Length: 342
Image 1: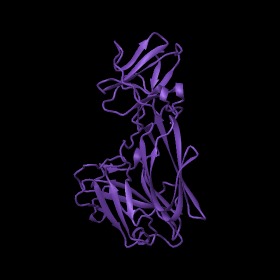
Image 2: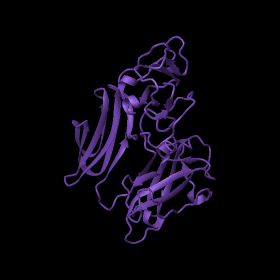
Image 3: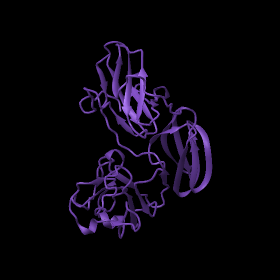
Image 4: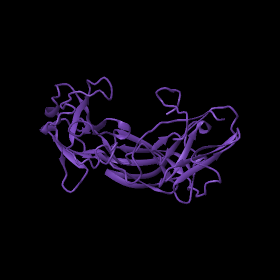
């Protein structure tokens, strides 16, 4: 049993609160012939430029019909690490972390799009002058914003921004969607219709349903085309507050060869789940850790383990951060241990 292998895998994401977009534009559904006013919220995504007190520059290109894959930037018009005033963004007055930039006189002219080439997305990474700080999307991904073709039907999901989050049962979640044309909007939770409305936008407050996993599907139907967007949430039971058992310390606490208690220092968090071989690394309400009365430590007792077996595990903190046990003498990582599930 002492051959326990915590997974040391960090996935940084957005915290809880009101979801927000990392970039948005005016007009909301730009075409290749539009001048575009771009906005960047440095508090979102990796937040690498939040409160940087620095000049912020954009690094940008486009994804086009000539791209070999969804991340193949074309027509990159900026150079990384060069403090060219032409690429410097303007901080919005009164906002410490909101920046804007004008792409013009049109997307076509700004990026030098060739005849017959279709622009699918604008691509961005934001940085300080020398590129030592950067702002990217959740998980360190590049930032993309769609470009529509002429009068094409398109939707923009303003919230939620995260593809997955953990909610307590009954907790509210704001859904905001807009469309480039009038449409019938429908919201489904695990296949059940929750909301239907007509227009070019809607806002709806979803209440987290039955305990367990949920898939939410949003449909927008303009009469000839139906567009869909899906995201997932997990409905969690209330956290139980219980004192740490006597003698238990942070880390792994063994009880012979078949049981152990795990304790993690994670102050002021909403919830912590144990992901392990016991659940195929899926989130499960039976493995929601207890919180100590001072709100500092989270713990859970695991029994029924087989002597000598490997027990791989990690913690999911506030639904966004996965972390292995910091006190473990042995760790796994996804580069050297590729059999670990995501």
